[in-house]
Image (cartoon, rainbow, N blue to C red; front, side, top):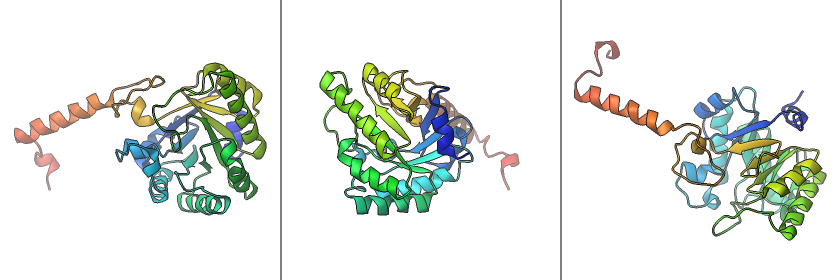
Length: 257
């Protein structure tokens, strides 16, 4: 059974676990526990200190994707198509194929609803597996991010977009910061899975940026729960190293040639 079919079969049965990775080392740890590993364009803020994902390039995504693939044995691997890489159907297909060829990923993810439906349809028609993404769209939204779908008009638009994306063939949809009631309606009305980030327990699965949940990033979002503070353990190791070097305990004979 292929990986995407396995993901789709989990809808209404068990939760789908999804996390981000940008390197082989992290991917190899996640691979034991998650269903989907996303090489997200969040790499821009996490590793490159960009203020926006718009600065992430196709080359960035491909290089990180190649590293992540080396750490994966079982998980479905999805790579974000970065800003400006799908301006039209021809360019989108060319860049999607370039990502897939170079990273050996299983699928790409594209942000947007009705505005990109023709592009996604073209990719799917050409046998590219696509994950959708609606709600907050970091590549195009500006200003302070606010949740989507609380007001009836916005709720109806998101529901319409989700149904349209399913119709044209995406295999799953990320709902980013979508109001709980709207996320529930969307999830109940789709045959494909929804993956939530800040969009309630009603989604079929959940995703977070790994660096955020382990406390490596000092960021604050309403939806973010830190499950461990990895910075504390890194600091402990560095302090021990510093102390042993200063006290001439390291490197001892055991660690020297």
